[in-house]
Image 1: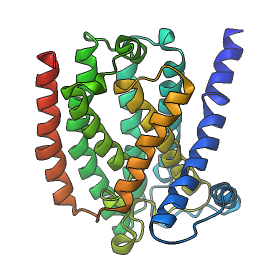
Image 2: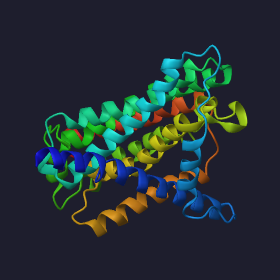
Image 3: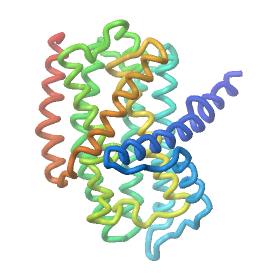
Image 4: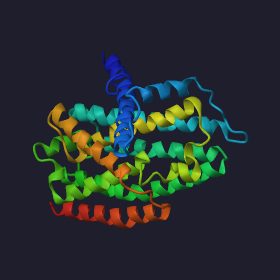
Length: 305
């Protein structure tokens, strides 16, 4: 029974099927809301599913002189990392008592591997524009990981040093960490960091279509491109939930949906109301502004604020 339960959780709910189906639906909401903000009609609800199926039946073209093994492995790495991290986030949010020591570190590890897949794939393609995208993605990763870690330390400190996501959720009880000064600073930091992890404006530097023609995914097609797209869709579904679990715990599904939609709308509004930053501007923003904000948050959390 335990094996069957594991397979169900990993492949059906809250695993593969749940993450991919709802993740693609959120990409529809993203495109629809963005279109409305820009006074356009936008796609029908089933468009992301049709796009995904279309990519599955297309040929995967491997560039000449590329490192074929790494080129084909990279999208699998990104997708599997997004899948595992998303499954863990939702599973431990639903069943906090089943979390294990250090699970939050494992989630952080897999979330980091998602952009690493993009970097490896772009580098393996031997395309100069893709290489530029890989360089930008790597710089972004170096930039936002420091404030990301500082922001994660805040709920860990406020929960009494707990390294279980489930215990962090339970420690909040009826008083979420967000309703404190350090919690607000952590929330703001994570919101910007997740915007960068999603590759959304103002941090869509690695795939800037007007500059480097999609950058990291320029040479990808077919199933490989579908896996990259799907990994971002899963992140769009998982990251708001991770933010809720860390700082804004919800007692029931209705409150959770409301909080999820608030965070989702903030992400979409930020995407549609800001210009793209230059890579040096993004790096300075993460290191000096968000780094300082999150570090102040850590100090406040240690002070009990």
